[in-house]
Structure formats: C-alpha cells, structure tokens
Length: 433
Image (cartoon, rainbow, N blue to C red; front, side, top):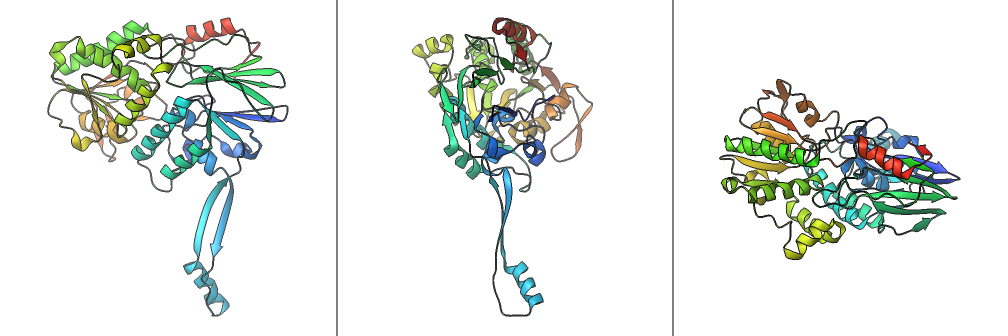
C-alpha cells in the first residue's frame, strides 16, 4: 500500500528469513475491500512483527481487519436434521442450517505502537466506524473488532529496544502527530529506518522529528510532498486566521473539515489564541464537532509530557487544551445555525459524517467558506472542491452549485523537500527508498 499514492500505507519487508510489516492503513477515499492494502499478495502467517507508526487512518485503520480477518475462509454448517427423502432433506438443510461464514486471520506475529498511538487509535477508529456511511457488506470491522485488536497491541516507549524472533527494533519521535514514531529495525546487523509520516518543523504542541544518532543501511522515507516547499509557518497561520476572520465578519460560516485527533488540536490552539486577542470576535462561536470531542481532549491532556517545551511550560500555569472560546458539538441536532460561526468537524475527507452534513448545507452560499487544512487525498470530496468545480454532488445524490469560498492552507505536518533533503543529508544512508 501507499506506493505511488497517499493512503493504505503498508510496507512488507523480508530479510534473512525474518519479516516485518510497517503500518496497516486504509485509503480514506474508498470503502469496503477497495480501501484495503493488497493483503492477498502477502502471507500473514510469515510476518514476525507489525509496527504501526501513528494513529492516522491511512496508517492504522485496517489493523482490526488484519488482526481478525485476513487469512483463510472458514465455512461452518450445522444441520437441522429431519426424516425425509434426500431431496427434501437437502432443501431442509439449506433452509434450516445456521451458516456461519467467518474470516480467521493467519497472522501470529506481534504488534507494536507507542502508548499515545494506542490510546488515540482506539478513539479514532471508533469515530471512523460511527461516521462511515457504508453498507453492512462494505463495513470492514465493527466496534467489537476494534476492542479485540486492542488486546493484541503491545506498546513501546521511544528509544526502548525490543527483540522479536531475532529482529531488534526501537523508535524515535517523528513529529507529525502526537505519538508518531520512526522505527529503526536491525536484522542480522543490517539496519533499516522506516520514517512513516514525519515533520522536522516544531509546531505549537509537537516536537520536531529526531535525527537518529547513526546512519541506517536503508532508509524508507515518506515523500508526500515530493519537491514542494511549504510556506513559512507564520504565513500559513496568518492566511488561516485571515480567511476565517474575513468570512465571519461578513456574516458567513466557516467549515474546517478535520479528523477528530491530530491536526485538529493544533488548529484549535491557533483559533483559541486568535479569538483571545480579538475581542470583536467573542460573540461568534467556535465549535469542535465530533462525537468523541471530549474524549479526544482528555487523551491529549494525558500526554502533555510527550509534547514540546512550549506546551509543557504553559501547562505548568494552565491547561492549554481547556479552550476559552471553543465548545464541543456532539451532533448536528444540537447545533443552532443562526448566524456566523466556525465549525471544525470530522472527517477531514468530507466523505461522510458531520463535516459532510455541514458542507452540503452551506456550500451554496457565497458568504460561507471551507478551509482545507490537511492533505487532500485523491478520490475524496476535499480533493474535488480544491479545484472549485461549478457543481458538487451532495450526499443524497443530488447536485448543487458550489458558491462557498474554498481555501487550501496545509497544516498537515509532513516534511517538504527542504526538510526531507536536510534530513537525508544529516542521516546519509547509502540506500534510500
């Protein structure tokens, strides 16, 4: 997965009779089996260890499926019996049999991720199940599958060295999102660094990615932004706050599609600080719209010590995640849409859920705006509206004119070209993938 695309990250590596699987994601723009990595091309029973770098859906959301269902198809039939001729007996069997068709995984290895990733994985995947508008047949897993997967996940601390079947591995801070890790794997003295998604830029709450103290033999590195260069951080923040301020000042509504955890917390810190410095905006509400909003913030507050020095120092005085100007919003039924407002709603792809409901409601009014703050995945509605088409297809299948303003200001915390080239210059690996 994730070869030549963004989504369903899953890297299979074999060396000296040992096998590692890095990440286990889905493609956010697709549903059902089409969203999965190409699991049919690997042998799950041969995998010794599975290392998950962070909690984002494109890196972790096929894990419940992989841990429960990838492998052999098993059919079990129980007969209702009956004394009759063979043909009638067969018909009776078909009608009265209990058909249990289940998938049983053949994976027998071990799974590792950081403490924060495991905690947030649980919440984010529950949110994904709740907001996914797919048929029962296309539902890859349910809440029970997530719970069962939690029992199989082990945690690893940053810089802690573990060994499984002759495979030594440890991890470094990756930036990007809370708990994100880069994994260094050592098999028979050959070292491989898998970065996952990483950022070398410290933001308002996260540390920058570490540079390992020695060069690996092979570096498998993300290249989401290729040769692009990000605007300076202060420029992006000003564009973000200006777009929102100008829209609400003219009576408009602002939708910020974002997943419940990750970039959402970074943007909420920016918004709360900006509102505090602009008293004229205090009567305009900001909502953090997710069924898991309160739980998400509780998890983030648990891992303050994993964040950067700025947040830790601020936390000594007051909790920076106790927002003064932002309210949680659990569902659209509790939303009084009577004037200008700012709503950050999940999911970030606009494929379903609260963000899609609000987009469909607001997209025809030119006073309103949608601020896209993350990477736009091919095939998603977010990617479609960046090109500002005249019309969009609503969730109900009808078309509507797209009049709202679209702003694309990326805070996705992926390395750009200068960060990637600088990282590789410091690391100097002889082999790069």
